[in-house]
Length: 185
Image (cartoon, rainbow, N blue to C red; front, top):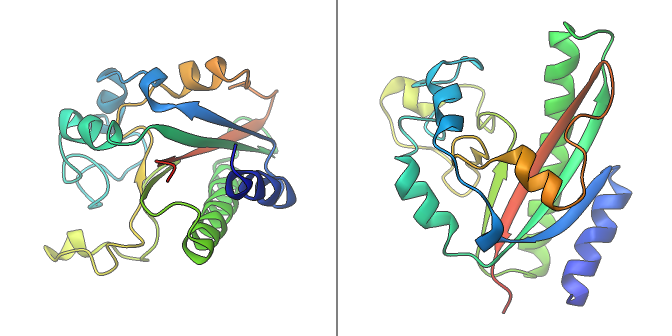
């Protein structure tokens, strides 16, 4: 691994990331069934966010976009909930995780460790308080917009298992993941 990736791994640890790994994109499993979860609108963002289905593109388009990269930096944070119905705690965990992802992206941009990369996060893009998509406008911040791992149809459980990570981290917890796809120069 390059020193740039080593530095990113150290940064992740300092930010409280529980688990991280470098993955080969060729080993990532894509499954259209995960898109069906999006279509069922379980998170409430289907057809309401430019980085979510259907606006983000077809699963085949997204898969081709992902397969342009050779490697991925996968990382997970785990947050304790009051109980399994603690929706507020879940949202808080996702927000904290997203802040970590944004710090990692800022580091990548600042250091130039990757010249081209594709960040994917847990859940819908939340950069703007109101997505321009709702007003039939183009994205106001395309360089900041981030799609979800699920929108890309990536099998998160299989991916974590292949890296020795646990998907379920105990009773009354939420596990959040991000995947930053990249090519090494």
